Length: 297
Length: 310
Image 1 (tube, chains in turn red, yellow):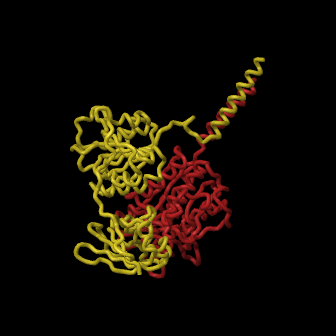
Image 2 (cartoon, helix red, strand yellow):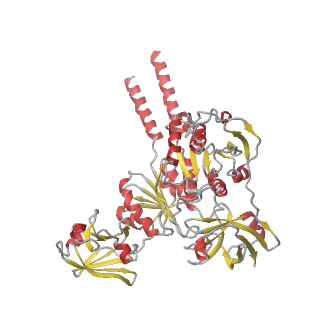
Image 3 (cartoon, rainbow over the protein chains, first blue to last red):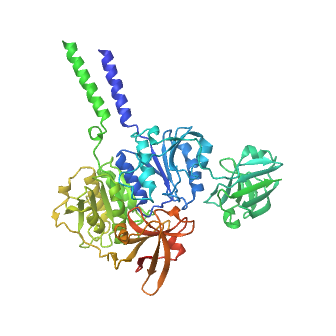
């Protein structure tokens, strides 16, 4: 008898858990928030499951900027629970032959997106557990076949919501692909012959500081002390945009107001700044896969 | 004997639980509230939208609120009508929309709730906002909001924020099931204030004339009032060129042959294209660029368009 009650209780809680087994759905796009595009994606998700929890990463990715989409994903994914489903739609090739995929990372999160470079840094940072192509015969909003230009709503939000709500499992997304994504080539940080090569993935927009992908351990190989002068060269493609000798310091306050310095930012990456000024604005520096930096003594 | 009854009961409960677990019918276990979707021209820098949400949460703290957009151009009722009509069908039946672009707030315009034939509710001033929704979704019934009942208590002295005091309050009560549609107020004739819009028309075998209704930001795509169904009557095949002429009151802004394709990536980067957008309106875009910027179309006021088959 007691066993029966115990069994019932266990079953009841299993049931409760299964009812609440919804993963967060996080949306990112370059749609802006001026019109109904984002709302339509959310409406599709709520229609799939009325209790789904939807969050916005950002909808202000500069239009068509796939590199920045990739950056934003890896800047925030660490802070979301395992099982979270990210839908990222920066999709200049919508309706053409690019593949629509769901990537499951080794860390147990899902990324629903066109395979157009958006997954470059996700795959690199978290590793690919497996990659599936969205089967649009099954995983596409009903009666949306006439529309060729809004897969964010008709395919990605729909599939992401179904996955997050547990209506389909990862296998039901579609056929398994080779665990390889379209990757945007960029300069990885490296130390060669006394010089460090790296990339400027993104700016600290608010202050105009320049962030690089060169970490502390690599930087240490230069063996610099606070106050030492470093050669810094910034290129955009083949064009040299900035070249100067500037000092390395731990704090902005070590140089005079208006003067540049090299420092390590809050992520322990090599960065450039002007004390109480904007390095990016003064020297017209942007960020992206084709913005590179070289530093040597 | 007693044991047998207990066992039967036990089996019954197990079956019930399995049933609840298996059906996806959340009504058994979850609340049955409808989503509440807000659209305004209030912007996001002020407290207005937050006050509306606060009112809705005070009605029912478990209500699910979503933003359609709050960046409708101030007082632009046509844009409100158009934006609402463009998203409504992607929401579940029963969803309650609160649309507040209300330049006549406090005057005699009626405050209404429209129930569409397709089962959605729209709470709004009847000032033209309902034009396209009424046309596309059909009017099941319209009721005038009875402000004696359906108005936030102690808000009578405020005459300029019905979005907060009347519309979201009524919308939230409807979405949460605190009131039924019948309790909104008295039934009106099933018609709404219509914004007059000249329809696009086919003027001969080869040409359609219409107007430009919107520059779609952030991409800079141009939307026209020419529905794909009308365009199809020209019988243009994909990848064929169409002559596109855009004029304002004084001059021709654009006269160009542009390729008709199904999506942006079917022309080279930087090239213009004509396509049917995701709401099945004919539009113009530049692959990986902005049509509006490329052809200096800053305002859609009085811009006419003519499409001619080659």
